[in-house]
Image 1 (cartoon, rainbow, N blue to C red):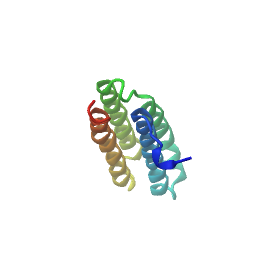
Image 2: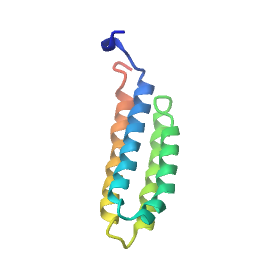
Image 3: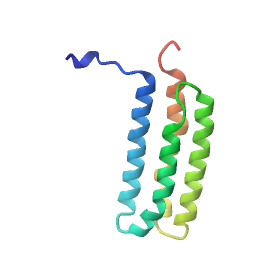
Image 4: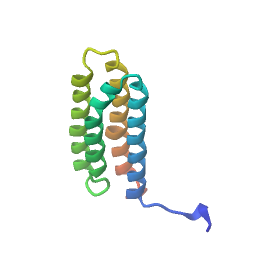
Length: 120
């Protein structure tokens, strides 16, 4: 099998990139909250809902729907994290991590979806 001729559809590339980014979010939150299992436990429903809904959003099929859904997911995730972690020293680092994720899903991904494949 010649590995340099493997091609991937834009949809599959989007799915893989999104899954990797969500794994990074989970791992980052887990690392930041590793000494506080109760706090991490309270973040699990937020991360689970965000990742399930975020991965279910359409990609190339409807970029406008993807962007609207992503805005709702990330607004809920950031505000939920602020509610859960309010008053703790973890609020700043977690919100920073989640803001980077939001930037990826709200800026990088829609740009990719509208520009890829070339000539679309």
